[in-house]
Image (cartoon, rainbow over all chains, first blue to last red; front, side, top):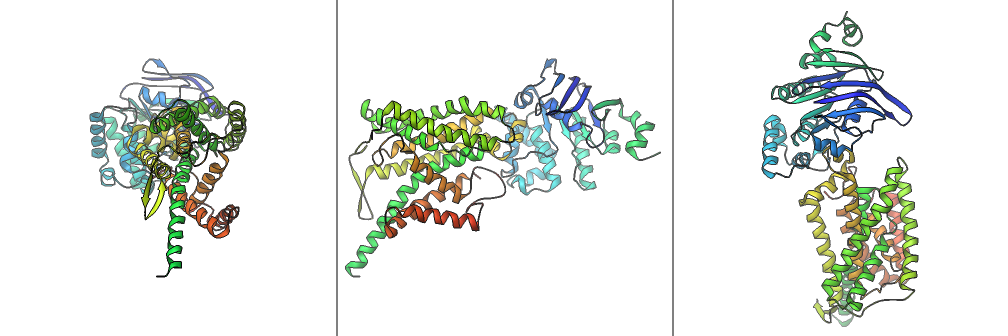
Length: 235
Length: 303
């Protein structure tokens, strides 16, 4: 479904990604893990068209989308939920969600999607008329996820959904992701919360200093000696 | 009540009325300015030139082509909308591709240069000649016992309709919602599939249209001539500064405050002093409330 080949990206003269290649198949739940500053978010930004890549190829559903503007990539069916969420703070929860379906002109479908999102995150239905800027941290994450789902995406890119959340809320968010996967969604998750992530995903890539250094099924990685020592803090 | 009190009351009514009618124009001009700043981060100093373009457009449509007033106003609006769209595509779009952190300064300098170029072009094409009309509508209204020329009242109503129309557009339509989204979070807008380039062009065109419509509807009160845009530009900048930059709702209230303040200070201090009074008010406000009367922390054009 998504093929990334030798992706190079960075900020001005500072190159962050060096030949990153990865692949996601339909229905998979894939994780991209690594330390702070390894280039995880940069990878997602480059795929989603928020940062023009400096080299390499990104193919989605058989078509090359490298360097396309973000709105085109969204149209192709990739939804990117950023770390900073990028919500419309002065708009209501409902309006944020409706904007998530900006590219959809079928009113009926929009309504169905809205009901699905409310079914998935009941708290959003309760706070429908509340301004996004007044929500709690966990609710914001859910709103960002919900907004990302409103466009009926084929692939979800999710950046650090656990960031800044209380442990109990992190669990809720992870459960939601797991449920989405069980309903057939394809997801690429970027996380620093390695143990939890490996427990819910199918496969994982380890990104270190802008390079992919490991790629394996998540269950294998949980037992990987190197990963245990460096990222899981166990021996 | 003696005679003197009656006169004072009439004067007060007259002042408020003049201020209110003037406020309508300021509000609609300032709304365009606030929109352009709120969405595109452009400190627009060529806004007055679109006011003048609207005035010229209406003059030629009404006088030369002999159209009826409504059609003339529509021609002027369409012309300034188009001019705004072309300006954005030709100047601001390429500048945006090339600027990064220094966008606000670059864009501001571009508008300052554009203002000079447009004023000189008007001078070359139309000459230093006043092109005005005595009136669009040959009638007058009785308001609170005062006779007010129909043109003034209708210009005021047009400003109100334009503002209401903009409100409806921003709140209820898909493109309008996209404009508000861009003003609140540009990256969020890109992520939901909004084409930023299209929204920026639309926003600049709408802002220019509001200015053009203002110039056209005021044609009988202030004729079209190359530098006619300076006064309304300064007044609308004054409005958005006291209201809070990029806040459309605040610009409306601010427009009326400034309109009334100007006519009152004109009466009490005499001609030439009303600008001093306005600037003094502005300085005091900036000293004590630098975000403007309605400025907020969250960025948005109209919520």
